Image 1 (cartoon, rainbow, N blue to C red):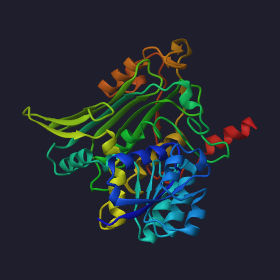
Image 2: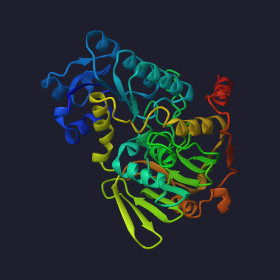
Image 3: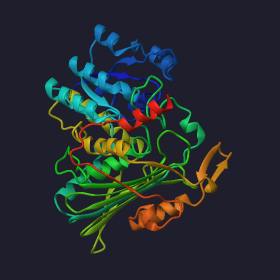
Image 4: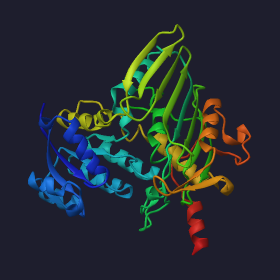
Length: 413
């Protein structure tokens, strides 16, 4: 296979994690790292290593493209920079792998989609579950009707997040310090993969995702952040298949993701967040099919291997494109535009000091589990802390408004 030239924008943080994936899980003969681009590259974890390897470093993408070029650009920079950096890379003839989210708002994602179409290049979005073989093979079986009609897709996650997690200029924020939209939340960040995957596996083609027909949410804030750390999401697709997600960072115990996808002739389950999280279909006759694990680091690195292959041979298909992520981004933008956020009850919040300081709601992990098992929102379960859900209008929703946040900011000023 052709060796391609790869540049990375944002070489600290998640970019550093991606560099580690490249080192451990990608054929070193398949790529040549021609640039590490970061405004503070002297501070990135691999500065000494990359210097020894004589990898050129640049402070800005503009500086890099003025001096060199790349077949593939990996964008792992802050969210609000994604749009301009995607457009710049495409203008300079590069294929792009942009980490999720592609953009914080729909308008930017649509601009990127148009630029991809005009450029003749390909852009992949880093929802890694969409790139991995177990999920793709499951999707093919769904499309072929081997599991029967989809009936219900449910997900449960109780990932505890401590105070330090939100010690960030963007986590849990509506905007960053410079006023750029960020819209960070549990739905757009930590558990974004699971909401996206709910739509992805029901897409009618390799690279599409299904758009829900209806959506209702209950959002809660136990951390005192600007957005929300707990979300219950209930919806239905045009096919009649319903979906439900119970997601929290404020649960009183840590539970890795649990998926239960019910079909006419099979139930697909997965549990965990590593190579033990095997996706298994159990059929009506008692037989099973093990699709393998989709969440270990080898599978995370598949997005890198795929996009390197695309840069070497553009006929290779990209499973997760700007079009593919539109259902997830549409839901998230509409939720921010339309849904109210309620505080979790103060009398049930417990402050802990070990393993580090944090605050969690007593009994929330069990309550969320009840919601997951029944497919009912907290208010439908009758919990005394629950508030009325918001029915989200998706039909005709094509642009993020942000009006409610502008009004709040004006009142604050």
